Length: 276
Image (tube, rainbow, N blue to C red):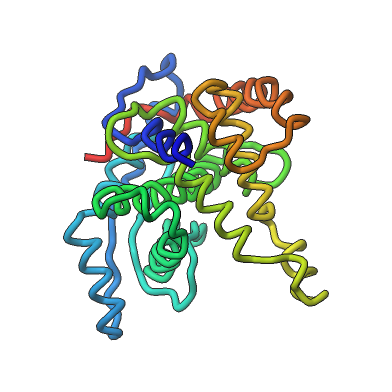
């Protein structure tokens, strides 16, 4: 576990600048990204929203998303949803992060006493923000795919997971905010919390019919890509989550394929991004 805790410092979010591709029609796309903080009459939930406003969380996410070429405008922000969720709404072209989802991340972290014992208060908040940024990158992928009409095959949810990891691993320098390892931890924690063996047949059918991969599948997928991209740096994480040897040996080739697909489909939309 000590090796795993050390690995959390490996991937972080800081200022990044990217060289653009040769001039194409995409260079003319000038969609603007605006932040929002929705008012709610629930005083406790409004207090959470005001905390995000004070930390300029949505503002930083909007500035980050402005580092991508978009055909149309996009907004990103925090609101109360009465359910733990984060999503991209295609009709209004909004990335929404629910305060209840943030509460869920905090609850899951508090329940992990072993990890909590290794993180002081500031690092706990860094860890939580890492999960939020990982989820934001996932939803940003949905936005880019929808707004720019990016072609893809398979489930879009899996492609969004691939983009979130690929962008964090390849285009974000490691100085301030860990993303990859906290995201892996979060999916594994949810998988442990949601015991499939104890579900009713109707509940199990509902989960299996969902457009997302299972939480444990997402854990193994991101860990495998991490291992493929950084064999030495991700070894302790792979061991911690219990990635099988049969999957691990395929991870370099799996990541190479993912890397090729992401570069082919998304690189031309990148012009620069910063969390400041």
